[in-house]
Length: 199
Image (cartoon, rainbow, N blue to C red; front, top):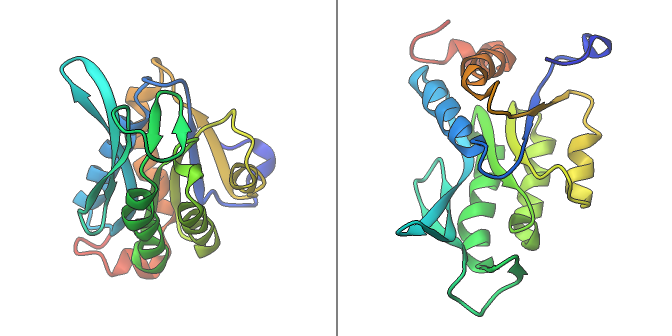
């Protein structure tokens, strides 16, 4: 999926973009499940919608290693930075989101960041966590808000060992297995040898 000119640099970061509601988080959740089924230690964070009936009222953030959850944003509070019709819960973002990223950078085999977007980037601790993940050198799958202007987004764009994948209605089903194979192949040999099933 990378361009021919990048064959000398193995891919280590997969950046998913695409419009809201296209299925990026669902795709990431499937990749997490399949990697874990192979015994891969997956860390980082997932974002999930919170609904009341048919209406989306906020978002939760989940630490993939500890299982801890916190409210990321809500439409029913007046506290926190405003992003669209939501207010961001900076404490939850720091205590669960940023902690998840720091822990993943230290001890996960593969790092997941869902997502690097306007809500998450209101949190300075979350930004530091993202930087730690980029610096870790570990395989990284991130949902990135493509249109944002932020130094963190620029760090992703400037990575030599990244590939950017636009998720569409046409490719999203086939991407799961492809991403799992690519990420698994990017694991260091010592990490693969320590897996329960081996390779």
